Length: 471
Image (cartoon, rainbow, N blue to C red; front, top):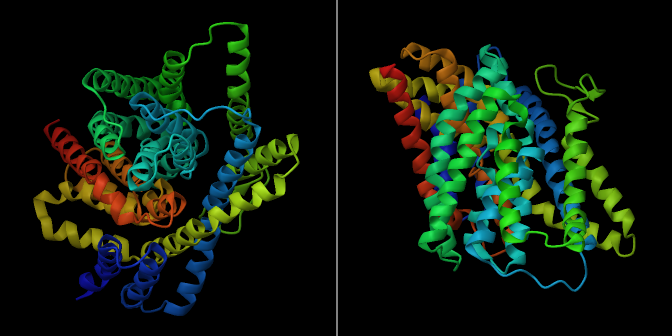
């Protein structure tokens, strides 16, 4: 009876979202209501439910404020950059190469720098500027979230490593191998999405894109061995991005070089500011909860808002209206994100998520290790972030893998990969992108396009576990 009640919120949430009968806010409110019996029965008898819900809601609000602030800051910065763009320039039409560069390289690069789905917001804006819209454009924008373990310079990977007691560099290396295999599977997914968007990819371009994905995968493996894991994603996507930009529009004279530098300067400045902020260890921070990450003055959101404010000051006429419009676009996805974070905190803090994992392990017996990718996928879909996924299930997953004979770092890497890969297609993130894509776009429409990517996460996870058990 208890496992059924524990699974009821997730089953209800998934069924409502996939059916299209409820939007993300209504579906999450229903799931929150359905979670109450499971939370009450799962909590220890000595812990009253109402104080727990109040406390975890406060913690969830604190956690949610950070990605919401980053989302708003990303929208503000993007709006400011649009105002600084040269006037009168013709919009570039959508081509397979431009779409690939935007979704898989440029968006992913910015996600590695900022985290919290800002890369997807950037990619969606660029794709809409090419004339692409609807669920296909939203699904393409989500391809910017394919390196989540290294997104925002890797806070989720660092947290997961701390939870199981392995060095962050070791966990990143264990994560990089299955993640690199999954990246190779995403090239055909991209071709499918491009076809749905009305931009079919010809055979020769497919080979070029597959080669670029292989290059990203190889650089990811090398960077995690030779460099601090925090910058591995930036290197893995930054170098291929520069190569693609050079191929698409190489500067041919001094004026061309000046235009290229002017276009790149704001983004180079943002990257430099973010890296400089991350290099300040021990910066003053707001730390209301001892077991949750603090909110330092060098947080990504602070840097984004500061950079956006500076960009707006460079052209102050009409800045207030542009900023207000950008913030208005953030209202709906921000509410959805808040509700999903609350659901994740209620389920994780009460032990419901861990209880579901343990029930699955007992039911599957010797096949329990192969449940790890499924549980990792589920935790990423529900929590919507690598931090949330690792906070909810990393200790349970690592223990489950060890019980099945897998090394600790290997098991932790499987969960870090599957949970982070799913986080880029999660309920919260998909709801946010659907909200930004337009009123007619529903998460269910996006997931119908992305199911091959979700299936690839499971297949790669199962294959990697089989490989680990052979070793």
